Length: 347
Image (cartoon, rainbow, N blue to C red; front, top):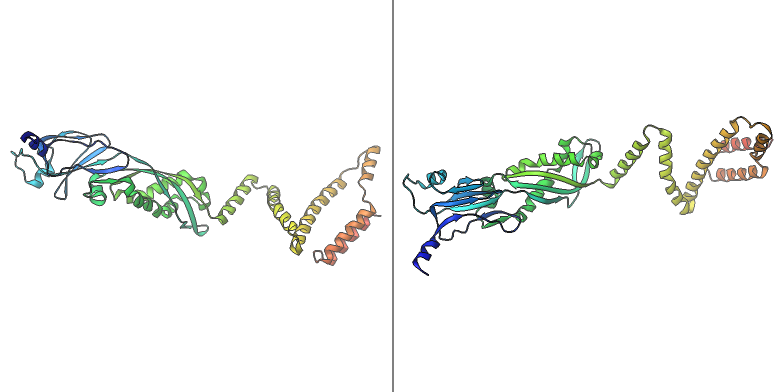
């Protein structure tokens, strides 16, 4: 190795960082035993910042641009090293580059249900997941609090800490959003904004800016999901109680059918109960038909004759009622009343 090559190796004229690969947040320029040439060039690209560190103390911070390294551009370093106005010699300093572009598509999610307080339901458990994006806003603070003197520091190494901060502030986000727990699933944007605001101070303490938070899914406990489904069903029918009863009956009929298919006393009772309920509806419709004015002429007489109850039908109904009375579903008074009503129709 020649003398000129040896001298060139010892002095650095250009300081710059060309990022290679994604996820590197901080990178230390490899100085080894080299020194920086006084008057050398520092290039900081867009989405980067550079920091000079002298003997563990952060000195000058540079944003995007090209700089000539002199006592004028390095005032803090000049002060720390006690340089005089005539200083023009090579010098030693650690130089760190930081990526300030957004680290997007970072994932957060609850590995276990998070217990939060709700004004309507007290303590409830919540699951959710989504994305967030952040960037380095204060490289000096990030260097002292996170990355330190390492050769490089990546987003993957920081992921666990930031994910924990997101989950830690879910309860605060729910409280500050003012959104009722049952309405969280329908207000994901508002909840995500509240989560960002609640978590931002913790990111600031690390020199980071939380740029955005998204909520992709929120899962309610099964028991509360059933309540939400009922609330949606009531919203569909509004204040019409008749429609609401129809909705509730439609929801209950499959359960009645399952109970009846299961057999046994309970199944029989549920099946008979459903039959009685349907019978009452049919009886109401029949009564409405009987209350309508008779049709005029021969057609009306024929219709009335076809609607008459036959004696065998009355006897079959009485037998069913007697069976219900025997099983304790109908009382003696109810049986007697129905019996008298049916016998009148034979007269």
